[in-house]
Structures are given as structure tokens and as C-alpha cells.
Image (cartoon, rainbow, N blue to C red; front, side):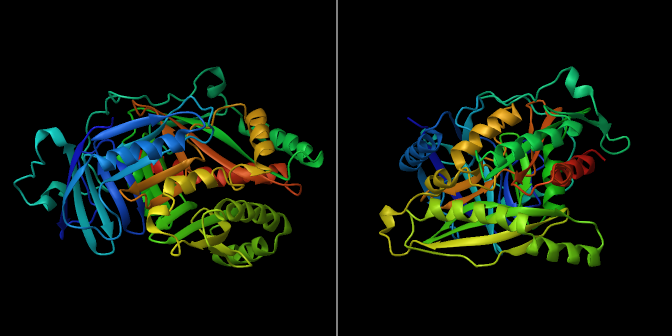
Length: 458
């Protein structure tokens, strides 16, 4: 039985959520364009493994909600209590999928802000601070006070990225005097085109139409990384992405797996990528070339079709544009399509929860391939390493099951001492893919985390 919790919701008029908590060495974050959640502490936490991890997570969260008590002001549009979570890419991963109920959270929507505090119901109710709640957040989040490295959590575990002789090859420093060194991961960069060629051979044999392959790089830091600084850098440099931090998984994803808000379901599909040059005129020409590229349009269409097929059983109407747009980010440009579904005709009690929609969608062709099962088998064979939570759903949901789940991209998984991280980047492979270009795409997609780590240690 999950712990019985007492929640108090208090409106706050003063401090924006992004300017938060010097004491929060382990931030819980879901943030985009000045909206979302910033939180810390663990009032409750649960782990889930295996193919039923989504179902188990939903069942646990329903129990928490059913046995909790909430007092205070209603929020806009979320309903307290809330939780944040991260799920593994593969059902076979030894890493757990996790849901966390924060002890303290600030939820911001538009110009409205709410402080949400949780404690065990057995204590007889929440003890609110005597001072103005806004004074809890006097220390700017973008420049947190230095402190000792965080201790390992008392419950659960976090991964220590692999180390060993292979990690010493192709090493380099990220920023002069930064104290951060990068090493090759499971596959050296120089070997990656060969892996792509193996995927192309499988495509030519008809085993798959598309497969999404990812590679990792390892980062060692001395002193340990302050995750608050990494999160702050990602928020600042990639405001159009969803910045997240849950269970040591930190990143800024441009891809929304699913949003459930009222009766509306939204999924943003990204597939088809080109690197930016930094020259506006050149990038405009490259954006036009991306929009006309038969290779990238084919890759994108596979991803759109997989999302449509997954959502159709849940919604009465689906709509999407016939032609994808081009999403411009600081490091890359993507072909993008927003798929929208209408649930308003359903009985409110029969609406699926957002985590059920995430389960149905995951993994999309944007991070796995098509056919899905064949692509997943090929990924395991060619990558040869567990993805952990990379490319899995990450996000949050409220007491009614509404919420937002992104795909964990442009990210790093940090170990508990925060002195090692495993960064990930991948790309979709179709028949027209060029191995050298696929390597360059992964380098471009590693840029956000490399940049954030450099800024955090500078």
C-alpha cells in the first residue's frame, strides 16, 4: 500500500518557478518556455520493471491519489497531487522505471504559480512555514550556491556508466579548465559508420524499413557536476525544448510523446534532421533542402504513421497536417508534425490516463523504427548496450491522469555521486542514409548536453 500523503496547495504571487531553491541539490524538473514544474525531495517513490512497468506505475499512482488528502487552492489546469517519472526504453532493462512524488514543488502556468507541499498523512497535516512562501526561493536557480556533492539516495539506485580501458580512447576535455573529460562509450565514433552500414545491410535484406540507432559517450567530472547548473543551462539555451531532470536523467527534449489536457491529446513527431551551420542564410537553404529531402520525408512518415496507429484506438478523431513543418533549434533542424486527437466525446471516467497513452505510443518509429519488433531486435543486436532510460518516456502527471510525457532525448544519465555521466544521441536509418552523415547527426545531437556541462563547470 502506498504511503498516505497530505498535500497543501498555496498560490504564490512573487517568485517565478525558474528562480528556485538553493537547497535543491537534486532537482525534479519539467520545464518549457517559462511553464511547468520545478521540485525537490521525495515524499513517495516507487520503482517498476519489466513489460508491465507502465501498468504497474498507473496502478501505484491511482492508489497514492486515492489515499491522499488535498487542501488549498485549485490549480490551473493540473490537479494536485502530482508526480514526475521516467521509464526505461526497453522492458528488459535492469534499470527501474520510477515515479516520484516531490516533497515541495512549484507549478507555473502562465502568470499563475502554486506551491505544492506533501508529507505523510499520519503527521496530522502539513506544517506550513511561518515566513512568506516566496522567501523559500530567494536564491536564483540560475546561479545556485555551491555545496557538497549529493549523497546517494536511500532507496533505489542509479546507474554508474560503464568504465574501463575502452573509455580512455578518443578522450577529450569539454572546455578549457572545466574539469570535465569525455571518453568514448560502447562504440567509438570512428566505428559508428560501420555500425550504420550493418543497419543498411539489414534494410536492403528487407528485415526493417527503418531503424533508429544510438551511441553513447562517457563524461567524467572532477569535482562532481551540480545538476542545478546543467538544468539551468539547458533551460536558458534550449527554451523551445522540454528541459527535464528526474532520477539523475537530465536533458532537453524537442519531442513531446503525448500531452493529455482535458479532452485533447497531442503528440509531436520529430524525424528527419539536418545540422545547423550558424549562418542564417545557409541554414535557411538547409531548412528548404530538409523539407524536400525524400530520405528525411520517408523517415518522418514512418514516425507519423506509428503515432497515428497507436492513438487511433483511444480517440474519436485525429488530425495532422499533410506536410511537416521545419522546427529550428540552436543545434539542428527537424521535420515536425503535431498529431492531435479529440477525447471530448468520451465519458470522463472512461478517458485513458496519460501514462496509458505513453505506453501505447512507446516506442514510436522516431526512436525505434518500423516494423517495431524487428527494429527493436536489430537495435539490441547492433547497439550491444542497454539504453536505460534514454529514448523512454519522461515527464509528469496529475491526480486525474492528465500530464505531459516527452521522449528522453538530448540527455545524460548521471550516476549518484554525479562524477560520471552517460550521454546519448541517435538517428533514424533508412535505405538512403549515408553512414558519415549519420555520425555527424549524432555529434550535433550531443551538443546540448556537451554545452550544458561546459557551462555548468565554467
